[in-house]
Image (cartoon, rainbow, N blue to C red):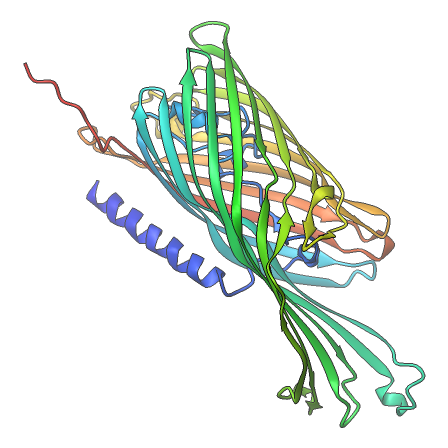
Length: 440
């Protein structure tokens, strides 16, 4: 098991390095991340993402302990110490109504999460998750009419770019109330920065002063989640679980800085800014976060099979930044998925120990652009691969992999269609760190 421990520590260090890098670089390339707080990332680990993201009513996926970061009530089912760390990478293709294509890829931290059982039927979890990501750059060129400039300079470029993102550090507690009911809550601190630039350039006009506006929003504040799960036992091996979880939609702080500068373009390259017309640090303001509600149902047989459905509603129409409504609509999402493990006790058939996962996602997102609602559809699949272990050891390792193949948006009404493939990989450690021994 020593080699797995070394592998886990190396993987954990790689995750931390990538997280440090992601704080200063864009981790997405989607023009749709321009709106709101960037692309919102629903909390879920690869175990759940592989099943279409169903999480609200899931708890024990196999004999391993897993962390369900969407519904803290599920912490009550954790009976071993858990460390779970992962990475995310994607491939994104953008297309417009002229069939022009652009391909991008990004890598970032997926998560790092810990859980410790406190008593039988209760546990605490804490960790770091992404909350949103911002990353885009595009240019719109239009005729520069009425300037009196030569014909070859009669084009103005409007350049929009953004990068950054928000992270969420959380701590939560879940516990059982009797045999069938579990309750839980998370407290989280959301923090990060969102930087956006807008430039106006006339590239072929020698000696023409171009302008750029830079905005940087530094965000920090607390939010809270809570959840419940109720289990209905049909027999000792068949269970139906009903789940509910919600994010309350708190107000958090934002500090905005605003710079307007002018610069020349020489030989096609931007020169040093010649003047800052405005350089302002605005007083602290508030961001009103949306309340998000999740409803779920799961049918589970033993630890070998489960299937479930989630439905989520996000009140994104309530999102406001520094007193200005973000102009979003409420979102609705349907998740369907399941997991099958052929034989959790197989001794001579390794493939029978693997968790096989499949799912589907349909979302009516919070974006409505050019009178067109932006929708997302995706198919997911995943694997939970146990690593061989010494039966004398209390440590268990599993590699969880998931892939999501989907599309978002449309080329109608001057919009962009995204085709994407998202990959998540995580290493999960289960161990019994604290033992009580009886001596006669």
